[in-house]
Length: 375
Ligand code: 3PG
Ligand code: MG
Image (cartoon, rainbow, N blue to C red; front, top):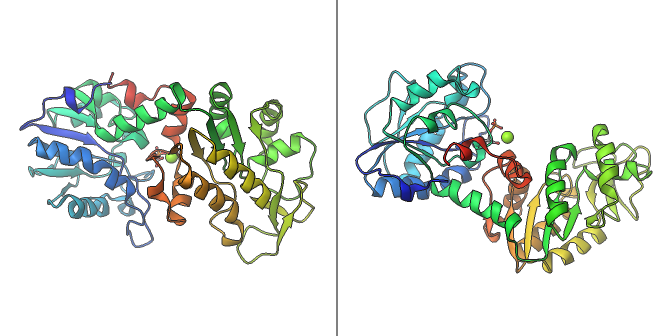
């Protein structure tokens, strides 16, 4: 993969694809600017090398030019962080000539998600060289992430470079033991990841609602717990693997809300009328112990409904263990990042990936179109 070291940028107009797909509240205020912050090293380096920037990014999944999905809030935040004016181009035919310009949401353009070569050519006509720093969107073969990279001299930005080398590094040459902590709701989203870690990790600790397909396959009662039916078959195959650790106790609630009746279960059988919403204290303690001994930890997916305080303890305990772990700690995925932020631990891990889907696909060993196009 080519990097900024391989690209001549001085005095040039550089098209930089960034992932500024940030969460906004109802009033279009950015609630977490981590992805904008993460792009700053590349943008500052390019400015120091006297490049002129043309930024391209997407926000959400607009069907047409939905004004709520304008990149104006991102342009304003970037301007504050960079200490330079960032001009927003309303469309590709009206691009101002400033030193730092941002295109409107690339998904306002019809051909963007189709990787349309004509659209890519219009992007390319606006710049001399191309830098992709949008790790979070690198698993998409879109006109601004893939096709355009083939039309201009191109390279990875510092964020993309670090994400790829860190995530590949934990698979290729991890400090051992390598421990994967995998949670979240759906086991089918994570099968590729679980299989990749079955080959390489020393232990895989499972939490979140994705436990229930495993427990169902093992004949446990799951009550009203969220259980992905299509996951039961794959979970049955995986459950036998010695490396896979499942919870031994759970916390259940009547309903998926904070002010519901709550109950700590001794085992993993969930009574009728209850749903498992967190791993229990013994499980969290056991997982924390394994994490403390690890040479490398990869975490993706919460242990329970951490957004509801009565069911946050399992995820908090695991997050704290990862934050305190002496080994190398790598966290991928939006929900795990949100959990770390909620517990004030985001800066206590070695690498907090800006990618959700992209980090999972990379760990699964799938080629990322945005990365392939730079090689
Ligand atoms: C993300 O937030 O996962 C990335 O920005 C990619 O967005 P997408 O899933 O809409 O392609
Ligand atoms: Mg996504």
